[in-house]
View 1 (cartoon, rainbow, N blue to C red):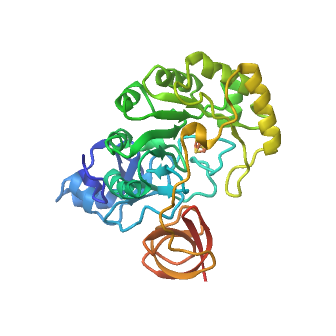
View 2: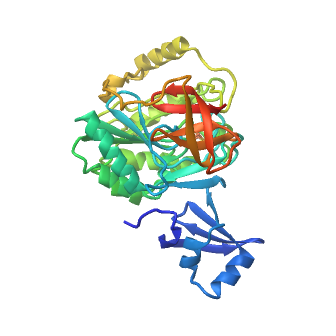
View 3: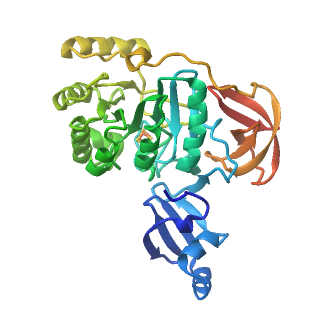
Length: 392
Ligand code: SF4
């Protein structure tokens, strides 16, 4: 397994092109490296391109899908994997650990809770975590959690864009204390080969499908390969991996689709061991996309109960349906309101934010300071081990 480091030149170059200003290299389908053309031409007289990619300091590294700056989170970068909501490991005090290997999405859903995709107005930076670094840190937390851990691969974006997904899943499946590996996906980056590589290792795929008719899909997603997603659903259902179809119910947009999605899920045989459907309520979040009115929880569950009776399928789900139980959380070194100092190590996920390291945690700090600066901040949010600060 080639190490995913800042020395990106050791990675396989998939594509190479030039535009007006830059020489562009695409690595592993997701990492776009840009070097000014005149600089590249000068350097290429002396060095080969792998060497230039590795060593040229002013290269720009972008997420090819979103066009945003892409930060490599490696052991050597000194960026901790706890504390941030866009990458790393999230421990919400149960036997389930959320693992976020990459941020950024190939879609731009109108209901996206994290305002993802190329059209995002709030997200400025993406992150990608070295798989071996993630594995090392994950093992430490799993050891603390004990037996029967679920590793759930999700993220602020599309987790299957992670070019190391199959390797990562394979390695996680060797950890004895892990009983379930699950992931969230919109399905588009998957194919038969990727799915079959994960068979026998991945336990369940939660596939988000919020429309099964072209017209509604267009309204919710814009450009969307509906047929392909439905095919992916069938491939998963016919594999050893369990399939849970997870639509977001957006009132006024896909009300008529929900029964059709239930029928589709039942028809293709979703839910071998787990429930076949995990219908989610659209919730407008502060930094997410807003689209019309949302239902109250009461209204939502009432509607689900009616559909449960009609289709004879479980739709109102509880954590216990997935074997999730409470477990002690990894110690949190911060308190809300506390004043701390930290070092800015990278650009922040959102505009106006910086990625800061303090007390061995990654902290999103609202600050205009520069990378390398020390920042004094107040902890303004500290929930489930995710820490947000504001410079003071
Ligand atoms: S809702 Fe999910 S699939 Fe849609 S844009 Fe957001 S992260 Fe991507």
